[in-house]
Image 1: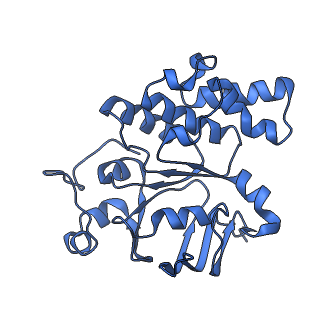
Image 2: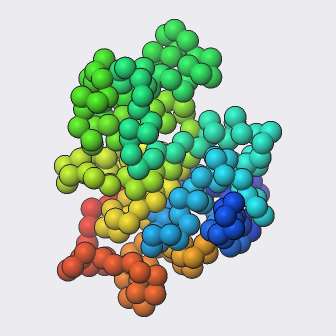
Amino acid sequence: MVAAVTPAVEVRGLAYAYPDGRQALFGVDLCIEPGERVALLGPNGAGKTTLALHLNGVLTAGAGEVRISGVPVAKEHLKEVRRRVGIVFQDPDDQLFMPTVGQDVAFGPANLGLRGDALATRVRQALDAVGMADVADRAPHHLSFGQRRRVAVATVLAMEPDVLVLDEPTSNLDPVARRELADVLRSLSLTTLVITHDLPYALELCPRSLVLDEGRIVADGATEDLLADDELMAAHRLELPYGFDPLAPRRAS
């Protein structure tokens, strides 16, 4: 008998209201298996970022539960959960604050007690993974926006997480930087959740998508099927670029 695989992300009955009383999530249920790349789609104000911030305990559930690789997201487990879940925010400058790229990437693992050769190896591996090993000694603010975005990914990879969450990863990227980031994300074996309004990017990277609207998961399925569902798209204010056909042949993900 094959043993059941523990989901990388498991959310059950998650509800959350902000202190002003605004209800952002209403009984969200979702499950992401280890190694999956999943897109989280939805209009502005749907609750996507609110949901993401529950995955590493920045926000605490009002009701329901979140588990990461079987570990409950609860106060007593926050250190472990935050090592397991790395979030790359929309603005890389929110994550880059040290004098050099290498110091930024080293910051997290150093706080966990890594030192010496082990720390240097961790930094080098993380920068290699995003194709930025040659800028370790440069100041982050001397890099292009796309390069800073990849360095921000490296700061998360250096923590060796189980789950990578990216919030609007293509925001403000030119076409070349967008492709470079896609190549990086495609090369990783991590469980990945991509929060995005960039529907072609979701199709390129993520075989599966979830649609969140008004704090509820309203669709869960193959990305191409969801994007080809005109009624679903219109109902939840999702729109493809003019002339883009989600069912057209594309590069394998």
